[in-house]
Length: 139
Image 1 (cartoon, rainbow, N blue to C red):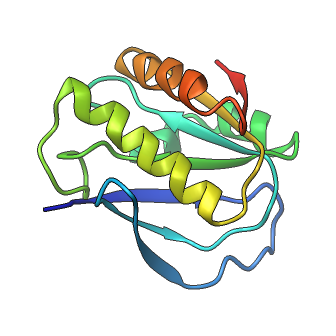
Image 2 (cartoon, rainbow, N blue to C red):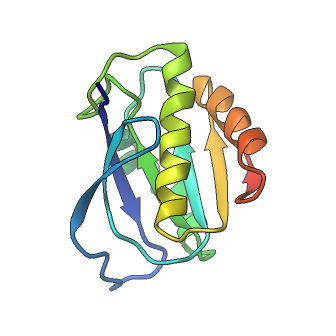
């Protein structure tokens, strides 16, 4: 069976209403739980090994850099981390990344950037190669 990914979306503008939380079943049979969001460039954050997106609360300057430049930020925890179900593996992180990009595309996001550190770099490079139609930036 599929699993769900725990995710968080931060809009670039204050006061934007994101709607209700939704589950989306992707083509890889995974469910992503995230809020509906606005159509703006979105940076997908691919965590380093054994990290959780929740630790980004300590990285306010990094978040503010992107938000102040008009980019939304989309965080997610890989399978087996945080509230994401499933079991982690090196191949699973790229599958999880694909599920995120497909989810964002299904919501109308057409401009994405990818940031990856450590094992997140593997995911980021894979996604940039796999989705050149929507990924315009690789960090």
